[in-house]
Length: 461
View 1 (cartoon, rainbow, N blue to C red):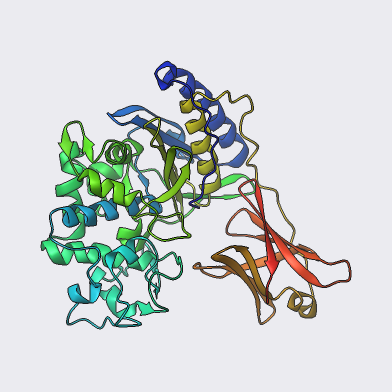
View 2 (cartoon, rainbow, N blue to C red):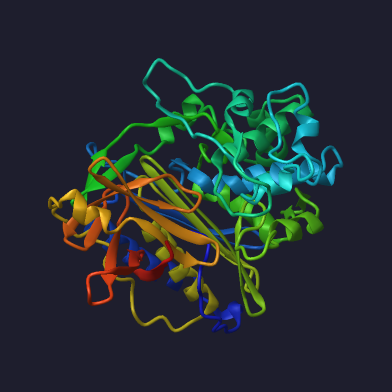
């Protein structure tokens, strides 16, 4: 999700034609919509001064064929984590909190306890997914009569798993607690703080990202998923840990906020963050790692790539910023499980903005239909084990009853379904796993296929 490899072939960015980039991007988006069934894709291109261009292609409502526009509002998913981190860093810059102070100091009187009192969890750990904490992300369909519990209820449910700073473990509830601390320290709701201190200074005045206003409702895209490359309507959801990425904005709104990341904390002469705090956000916090504070980070020569993706049921989003050319792209779609598409589109646009000679378009993202077969449990049991795919990343394969599951480090378990004896597919995302043997029937490794790439993992246990 966070590592992006881009070739550093730059030319003078002054001669880049944005209209040419847009024409190329429009062709790619139209092809993707036709092939995949994604209803609409909307984007904003920006530099260190302002939003350069915004557009939307496709439908915000498929049944009524209502076109999406650049004013159409989507769910941000986890791309909002950068905004939550910016809120914390604002308070850090004002010395209202310290990101290296134990969070237990701010949560006195609560049920929170550190795993090891000699190694306390800090906000730096929370924002870099190195807290050693685990918790449950609860989502509720918006039309149910239940509502998510308030942010402070997360404290009682989050549990210490190990010492902080050891393992990268993606943690949505940790961002919920980060938002709660903003709320507790300022005496304002997290939503009101974001509106007052981030949105309003950038003239984003009609948006309430967490409680859409009536005007916003008229502009909102409906959520969809894909089945056999066709759009299928799905529910809106609400989340208990909403500061982790359950917010509603337009691409241009998010682009304005991301200009701050390219302009030393400023937008249009308005200071949002101190330059040093922007630098801190974009610094790898732990090694080995590719994550700063609220953003993924990849260093490529003298260029730093800052990125994040996000997917919730019905919506996907992605952004990439290139700090050398000082340009970025933010893309949204009203279709869940489209992160691979938006990542590839984002990479493609950055290459165009760099002036690279991109002769080939993007590959087809049409999903292949896999037919599930039945395998005996004694065959499935052969695949159980731990497979290492990176220094700090692995995949656990295990049986529960007669079902085989895969669990990536720091993520939830996902059932995998066989379509050949040694080949499996995942229904909730476009990914496949193939198990490899040594020629004598012993399983020695696996290969994960996703987003047009393949990753091998050696069996270690």
